[in-house]
Every structure is written in C-alpha cells, then in structure tokens.
Image 1 (cartoon, rainbow, N blue to C red):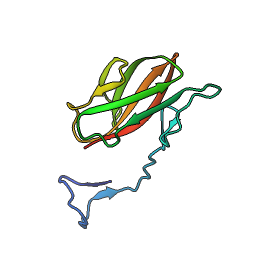
Image 2 (image 1 turned 90 degrees about the vertical axis):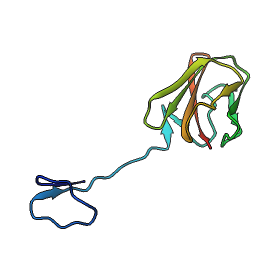
Image 3 (image 1 turned 180 degrees about the vertical axis):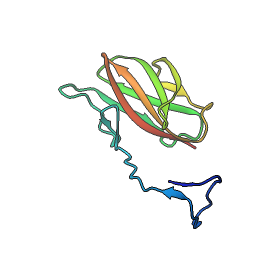
Image 4 (image 1 turned 30 degrees about the horizontal axis):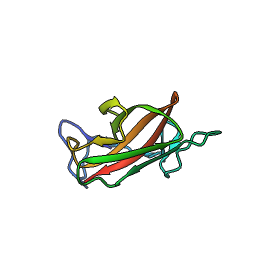
Length: 120
C-alpha cells in the first residue's frame, strides 16, 4: 500500500513525501469451518453433500444431499455478501449470477454445509 502526499501514486513511482507499507494477505482454505476440498460430511454422520456441474455454464446447479433432509440454501460471493437464498431444491437457478466463484451453504439437520462453485 502506498500513499503519496497530496496526490495519487502510480505503479513503481518514486516520490519524496508519502509512505509505503507491505501487508500479508492470508486467503483461508475454508469457509465457515468447512474445507473446500469436497469433503463436507458432518462429523459423526453419514451426510454426503455434492454439487455439479462445477463450473456451471448452463445456469442450473444440481445439489445432492444424501441421507438427510436439507431445508434451505444460501449463496455468497467471495466478499461474503449474500447473493441468493431460498428453500432447498435439488436444482438451483444460478443464471442471474455474474461469472465468478461463489460459496453455496446448505442447511442440513440444523448444520451448515458449505462448498464452492464457479459460474462461467
């Protein structure tokens, strides 16, 4: 991050008055405590949660929850903003979403399972 006195700095610019600071950005591999590795079963249960196709190109995301009843879903963008929510269905229309990466959170037996997906 750089700040120049009384002006905006440009890339690779040298200036006399201002400040430059370096920061580390940590991008976690999990969202709400669940990993993004596709293994989203709840501890001590036989709940399996899968979604396909991933990436989504036709606007419909298929979600399968085995051995349990899902009640609702929420879709978040990577900034953490909720972009869609509703009663759980095995097909979710994501055609209104812009291209990018999203997180799908499904409520199953009071627990929340989360998995990432991409919209092309």
